[in-house]
Length: 112
Length: 118
Image (cartoon, rainbow over all chains, first blue to last red; front, side, top):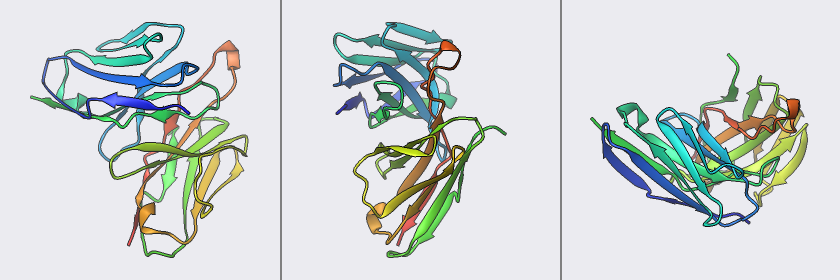
């Protein structure tokens, strides 16, 4: 089955700097790669996703890149703000009703 | 509010007891999930239902029994609770198929139920 590795497990950045979180996946049939943000005491919330037919997607300060050949994808947050502090999860699936397989999460701390 | 809701938010109980967690979504979705998040924040799928039918069961002990009375509800009943069942349980939902020619994959998560077994 699918296995998703996520690094780093913790990340501290100064406000205004960029943050990058990387994930690798094992199942070459996976075609859907979402990123979720989980704030303290809340459920995960989708912040951006990418499908395998696209190499990059951007939404304001957030971007995701996908390298299908290397089977890795990354989350980039620019101009970080204190409210970006949270746990971020990457995930992969074959789409449809197949389950999301999550990475182990990255705790991002943005220091003001 | 349109959302995925869960009750209760917190559940503290003794080992050996039986308890239930309820989940409801008013998003018109037809697929619902239960995930378990352990103390290290690792999120793992437990079950998935599509149109009230079980489609995913990820080697979860049979003490856990999901029940879907209709497409908007997926409840989780746990028998003979054990210490290792302590975790946060998340319900999620999504719309399957390709309505309007577009494939929707986004899963919407509920706020979670923190279960503590003493």
